Amino acid sequence: RLPESCFGQPNVANTRPIAPGAVVEWGPMLKRPGGGRELRADGDRQLGEALLREPDVRAALEQLDREGYDPGARRQLLGSAIRLTPEMAPDVHEVIDGCRRTLGLESPIEVYVYPGAVFNAAAVRPEGGRLLIVIASSLLEAFEPAELRFVTGHELGHDLFEHHRLPLASLIGGRVRLDAGLVLQLFAWQRYAEISADRAGVVCAGGMDAAA
Image 1 (cartoon, rainbow, N blue to C red):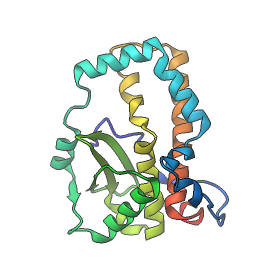
Image 2: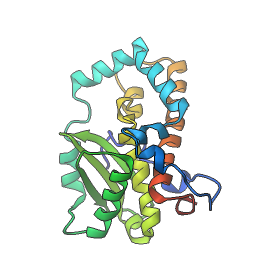
Image 3: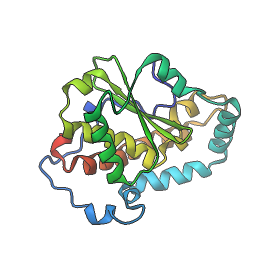
């Protein structure tokens, strides 16, 4: 089982942008300091900030912090998945390092692979200043480099836009009960968050074709 702090654990087959063949022209913007953050969807930013100001959401987050929610996610990964070092998988790390540079991320990244027949990947809540990415073995085996750039760019987008500040599964399943309206807003925000992450993935891939 993947750690609960994995953001969304999306099936990448269901997160595909439209318009294959389109050329992405965001290079000048990305060269500005923090430019990658300008990829964030307005709905993601606005609704996310509004939710973080909600008293009930803040209370739920404080309760999760007191409980140390999902402690030791990295330790869990080390026991249930294989950490891919640059020496073990230089091609994979070349792709991921390229995405990190493109998005302007500076934190070190650890990559884990787990046995799985379903194409899937996830961003785990960062620990100790490290970004953690989990990838299914079937995805690594089947995807071309450009497709892998889209997937890893998508997951790094969750880190870039700090989506882990709103851990949806933990908030909904926590001790602090959120009313139905807030839960619906959280799900709406999650959809916007996936759009933001898809934009990061498309930029890393260099266009829409790899995401189609």
